[in-house]
Length: 417
Image (cartoon, rainbow, N blue to C red):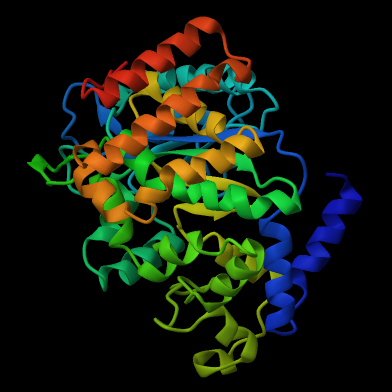
């Protein structure tokens, strides 16, 4: 971005949102960027453990030493984290989970090459402090402990506590594989939006990897998903996201403005927000907001970061419902999902195949592939996706590995590396 463009963006961000209509128009425009689907990205989260004693709680000082110049500002206040060698960004979740966010790539081969290089770099950095990346999507041994001391995370923890333990668990003890794909041409957005939601229950079941938490069998194939759903329904519930086939941008924009504020940024003091005050209330200066300055577009941009739906539009579509995988197997769900949205014809077929299990998120989290309908759906989308891997510019040996790994999961023999 040029200096002039940055200045123009800063001017827009500082402007007040005049009314609800202007806020909704802005959300729809920034959350759904239209154009031919070309780019793919991935966000890879991992729990971090002591190599000798995996029950030992994460230590901020060890993470600072390990990550060095890549340590994010949440860990080193005022710091500016250097990108990883292949260009990925490194961030930390509140419990010390590592997240590697790749650059967008036009080639899935390029994405996987760069992500693997950056993942290997982070693995080596952590090893220097006796730390290793976890292989599960929820901490199998430790209770949740928040180690990052920021006003945002402190306010989140207090807010979510009112809903039960799920929020703290989600923040501090879980990890996911997130796949980022273009929203597509305007005419194709409704179908792609519907397809990535319809895929949710079957891919959640297929890649469930979080049954044991704090040494106990949770009874859930994906206890991570359960923790996310137990956080705050207004900002995590998938139901209101997947049914907006006719006009996803407009429906999403309305939802965003009707979602309560999670936090209110301040220069001093806590960031706690009134429990039911929505962004629309702030624009209209209702309730406690009548004493506040009008919200700016920067405030609205920040509010967008506080929704944690299974698919979150951020210009592209950020698919967030897949459990973290062992470091060697994150490629499986990424490649499969990309193959399943590669053409309009495949997208239409996905919607047909997934129709019998659409909306069965809770069953997928609890039963996984033990549910016959979800198992049938997972097998169908696996066959559809694996058939398309040859179109994705992957090395044949990697394609064969992915097909074998997915087949093993369907047969109840998941590979771990």
